Length: 219
Image 1 (spheres, rainbow, N blue to C red):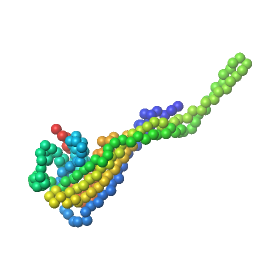
Image 2: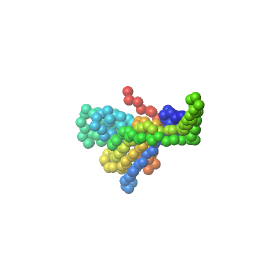
Image 3: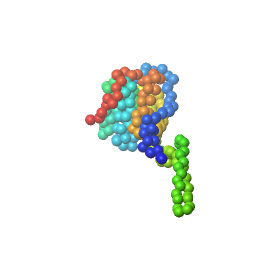
Image 4: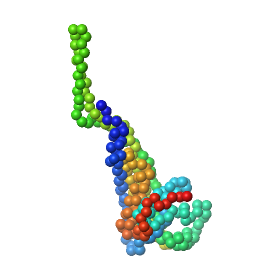
């Protein structure tokens, strides 16, 4: 008797996990923790930029960090001078700009080898042909594995700047990996949430608004 793939998958989902490793550096210079940041995502197209900015912002809002996407502040069809951008940020009460670069976001395939588990069971059978008898024996044992799974992995860099002076206050790189029951979207959100918590813990940003999850939905 074989253990079904579905049974293994159900156990996997019950034990689903995701982990993030962060390497970060904060400027040694003293500064007042920022209260509101604009999220600016590096991307090859507007679709990627919009998706990353929204994901980061939702994660920040969940931890009480006041954040807005750059696409809500700076119109893509307009051209801005540095002075114009500063004026807009000041008008909107934004004192920090977080630049996010999605280095990688994909799945990697891993083969789960077949393994025998539990006690074995042996069955025998005697067949008689006239005056002759033949004995056959077969051993059964439960097995798991023997299939491929896909695991998410994401890699981001983060650079936080003071809005008016343009001084870099904090920089980080984060890598997240999960098991086969974690979606790519969940891995991305987990990464941004860990970054938000790290920024608050290190006194770089303040949780200036009430914590809320899934608060932002683009119309």
